[in-house]
Length: 161
Image (cartoon, rainbow, N blue to C red; front, side):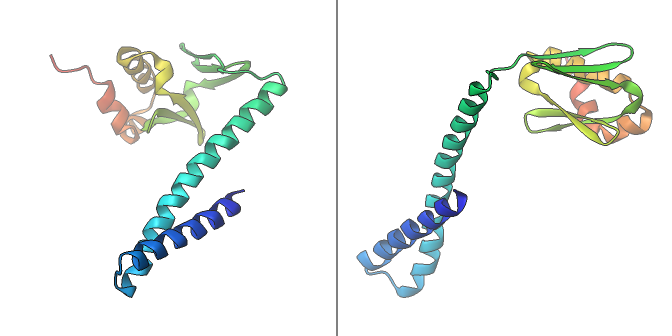
C-alpha cells in the first residue's frame, strides 16, 4: 500500500511539476527542484490519508475481536515499585531495577533493566500529578540515575514563587 501511494505521489508530483514549469514558461533547470517539492508535498499528503485509512481498519478489526477503546490507564507507585495498568494488562516494576526517567515528546519513559516503560503525560491529569509522579520516580533512583535523568530533575523542581 505504501509503494502504491509513493508511485501515485510521484506520478501526480511529476505531472504538477511539468505543468508548473511548462505552463509558466519557466527555465528548464527549474523542473527538478519544483518536481521534488511537489512530490514531497503530494507524497506527505497521501501518507497522511493512507495512515488515517489504515488506523481506521486497525480499530475496526480490533473491535471485531472484542477489543474496544479507549482503554483505561492507571498508574500507581508504592514503596515496592511502580505499576502501570492498561485495560487488562498490568506491568509491575520494582524500584531496584529502575535506572532513569526521561521525557520523549508526549511521554515519560521509565527505563527498567533496559526496557522502556512509556507513561503518557496526558494520563497524568495535569502538571501537579505529573510533577509528583516524576519526583516519586526520582526519589527511588540512585545518584547516578538522577544524574542521567537531568530533564526529569529539572521538571520535578518546584516552580519558583
